[in-house]
Amino acid sequence: MSQVQDIEMTFFFQKGLYLNKTRAYEAAILSYETALSFQPDYSDAWYNRGNALYHLGRYQSAIDSYNQAIEYQPGFSEAWNNRGNALDEMRRYPEAVESYDQAIKFRVDYYWAWYNRGITLRNMECYEAAIDSYDRAIEFKPDYHWAWYSRGLALRKLGKLEKVIASYDKALEFKPDFEESWTNRGNALYHLGRFEAALASYDRALALRPDLPTLWYNKACCYAVQGKPDLAFEHLQRAIELNPDEYREIAQSNADFNELRLDQRFLSLLTNQFSGEA
Image 1 (cartoon, rainbow, N blue to C red):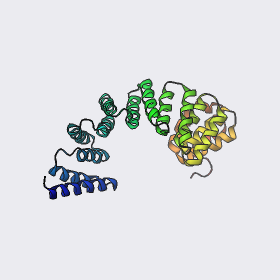
Image 2 (tube, rainbow, N blue to C red):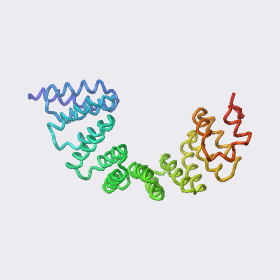
Image 3 (cartoon, rainbow, N blue to C red):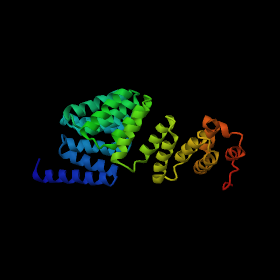
Image 4 (cartoon, one colour):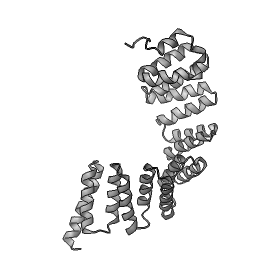
């Protein structure tokens, strides 16, 4: 390749990176392909072309591009990892795990690949293996709040509620404004019958997401089982105001409200008659 061609190739590759950052993915792909016309074995261009295709939801084409990157650079851990992500999106879970394993083989401390591997294993309902994978991610990046949170989700599937709470607590230690952790922590406390602690956790989530109906509904459930009908109706009404169809339907069959079903307020909430609704 001549010096002029090398300069042109570099220009189109850098342009592709810029276009990727600005989410102009179709244009980025064209730019990477121009770079590849100068140097077909340019693994970074194949890799970034794959990333652009991934963002467009063209997962098989992304995999094909990652495969090209790997052909020219077999130890390209990022390409193996992102290939796994595309396979996961296609629900080709065993292949995704194999791809993450390759990423880790070449870079054992690649915490993101360990984390993504855990996600896929959880999708496969292999919860113990998923937890082991999240633990490896945490080993290499102890403050990775998403790994702690996802570990809690896997533990929840195994019914290990105390460990679930401990895992969410670690996620919150590193990211105190993590609404999902506060919400799911509250759910675990609720299932343990620790209703006051659950309410406190939901309140922390509501401070971050005041218009999230599930939080108002979950608080209504806590108040109902505690025998506090006024607070239960207040919070159930707010949940229904925010999402009438969903929360009217699920309140109909939720045993938490069994003691309130004959109360006229409950009947009104489920028949569009509460104050403030036309």
